Amino acid sequence: MELFGSITLGMLGYAFIYTNKESLALGVGCKLSDYQKKGIRPSDHLELVKKHPYIKKLISGGKTLEYSSHLIPEGGFKSMPPLAADGFLVAGDAAQMTNPAYREGSNLAMTAGKLAGETVVEAKRKGDFSAAGLSSYKSKLQASYVLSDMEDIMDLEEHVERSPGFLEFYPKLATELAHLRFSADGVPKREHLKTALGMIKKRGLMRIAKDLFPLRKVAI
Amino acid sequence: MADEKITFTVEAKLGTLEWKKSPNAHIVLKNSGADSPCVTKCDSKPCTTVCPAKVYEWELDHKKVVVNYENCIECGACRMLCPFDNIQCDWPEGGMGVKYKYG
Image (cartoon, rainbow over all chains, first blue to last red; front, side):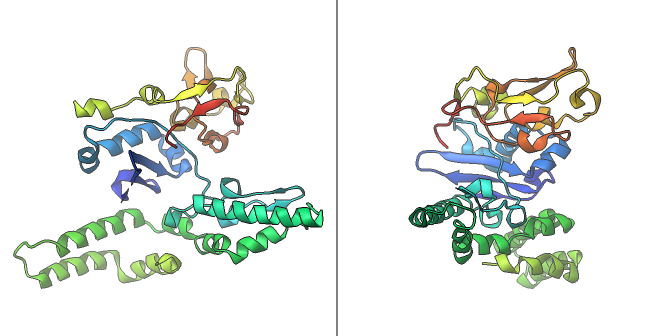
């Protein structure tokens, strides 16, 4: 379960509950520079999330087993270091291999690790561990989903940040549309449709087109 | 009483963790003197709010940022956080540092 909108206090990020076999992972993550600017303690932010009426209900009676925190390097495609140099290859977090649009990262790291392993086996056979000798690592990554997915999302974060009100409007629209859809409130559905169109028109069709067109690569 | 169970201070949260403590500090301020940027330039001191383990504390009386490196939960945020690049944070030496049980 993921939560967007007011729960991030105007920062770029989201809160989540993931289910493990015997426990839950509850957390919240926002852009580091947003925490820096706002002066909000991430630990306090987590407490706010836990007090949200919807979350509170779900975790009531639960016990905190462990506290943890980690920076996720979401610089992405444009801030990747050279992936091969004399004597070493870079994979996973160190290579900025994350895909925040799909909550992926460990899979990219595992694939990259496997491809790095294969590259090293080839390099050993050739007896060449130079950057040139290891360069097939990058082409292997290009042929896999790793670099193409990272390329497709490289401008996404900037786009969302540059679209004013994006993170407020869309989560709110989604919940209100769902509310209308599932309300048997005695109001004719054509009135519901009018209300929905009103919300969309308020943001403006051009604005919405500008908001959504850059998201086409992550539509599925 | 369910509320009490889920309302935690940073200190209580750190209480859920264990560390293998190293005698060597893996985090140091590049300049910790009276002329450090922490004292002379930095008003907002984001290290004191953003660090999830309260490793960095501003001691008003002594006018210095104290580094409680033993609290570190190795998130790596401080490596990018200091507006004056005054934090040097490496990982603790092999086998040392925080021990996560659940991931």
